[in-house]
Image (cartoon, rainbow, N blue to C red; front, side, top):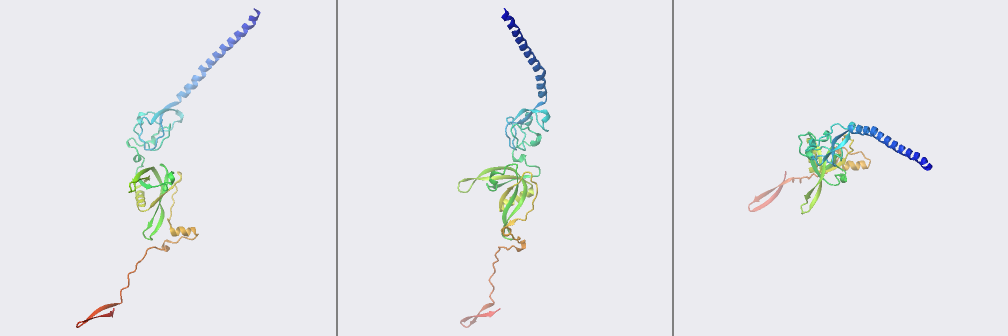
Length: 285
């Protein structure tokens, strides 16, 4: 009996301590956790985001977009919350997966056809030129980049080849490959680059692509500086390599070949008939 008198107080103390711990735990859970959860849920809203990576020119469908929670205090301007309102809209810039869809990334509501026509700015034109891996800098030129266009062609006045920078800071709308027949029944891939130009630039680009050889120069996305060049010819390039002053345009020797006509004779031949004899006599002019 004396042994139980010593054990019973210990058991009672353990029961009281356990009960007290459970009571305090439940009380803290009720008083603190629900408040934090309620505070977080109150600051979260559902917005529409991209369900996968989407390129520009894409016409949105319900499979391409979804809703996701977003902190209300961090919402950018122009977000959308209704998925159905975005079906059929056309993107004018690329979106990454889970990126919010903003009104500034969408073409006007009346634009219902995707592709290049949806992203060409007002007053601009899209024009495509053929190229290769060299002109495309081994595939480094991508949609959204900006390039300078150089052309090498023959100067009809001096009959020498000139390389000149003809267009600057031109946006690249699209890059792709088309299959052409070389004429021997063998298909050959040809790279195509679609650039955004104004009508006057389009004329220059079409002429350069038809009569000369094009070369693209990739620009830094932050570089908007314009540069005026005089063009490069073989004589001026060789002169610069030798450290000499480039020859002036009037001093450049033309390769034109002048063919001279043979000089007219200084006399005329006259036939003299005497009876049955005919003789020729040369008279000076």
